[in-house]
Image (cartoon, rainbow, N blue to C red; front, side, top):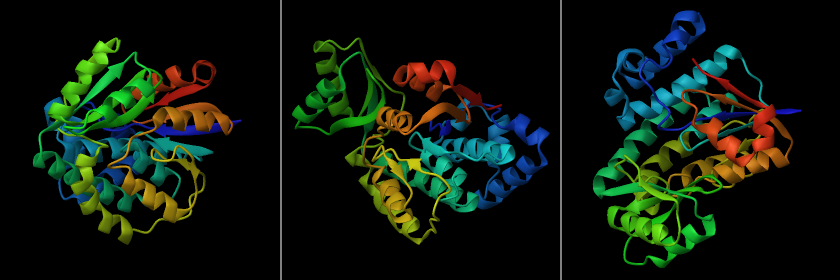
Length: 296
C-alpha cells in the first residue's frame, strides 16, 4: 500500500484559510510568522482576515496556498510514498518530499507569482475550460489556430481540458470546440495565459533564481506536471519546474502514473476540494476506497 500526497494550486484559496491551524499549533504559528518575515508583509493576516478579493491577488494567492499546504503537512509530520502538486502545488510537494526547504520554496513561489503577473500585464490573455470533448480534438483545434496563441494548458481529468492563450485565440478555440460538440466552453476569471508560451517572460525571470536554489535528493518521488513521471534526480526536478511555466499541466497523466506505480490512497493537503473531484474522475475505483482530505 502506497500513500500519494497531492497539493492544490491557485484557485483553492478561501478567506480564513489556515487560521484554525495557527490557533491550534505552536509549530504552525512559528512557521506562519517565518513566512511573514520572508515575504516582508503580513501574509498570515490576509489569509486569516482578508476578503476573497484580497486573496485573489496573484502575489498573495500563490504564497497563501503554498503556506497553507506545507505548514499543515509539517504539523502532521507526514512521510509520503509519493507526491504531486497541481501547478503551484508542485512547489508544496517539493518541500514535503524534502527537495526544497520551506524558506527556499516560499521565496521561489513569491518570485514565481510576481513573474507571472508581470507576464500577464504584457499582453491581454486568458484561459478557458473545455468540457465533454476528447483531449485529442481540443489539441487539434488549438493546433489549427495559427493567427493567435492558444494551447492546451491543464489536462485536469478525462473530458476536462483547460486551454490558455491570447484573448482572441482562446475565444476562437472556445467557439470551435462548441461547434465540435463540447458540452461547455467556459472562459475562466483569470487575466493571464498560465502554462502557455505567453509565460515565457516569467520563465526567464524565474530561471536565475531556480538555478541558484539548492535542490536536494528527495525522500520520495515527485510526479511532475511536465513529465507525468516519478522524478528523483534534483537536476531533472529543477529543469521540469522551470519548464512548467510554459508547458501544460498533465494532471490526469500524473494521477494515472501514480496509480500504475502502486498508489492505493490519495491524500489532498491544503485548501479547497478541487483535487478531490479530479481524482474521482481520473481514478474512481481508488478514490472511492482511498481518498482523504486534510485541511482546516
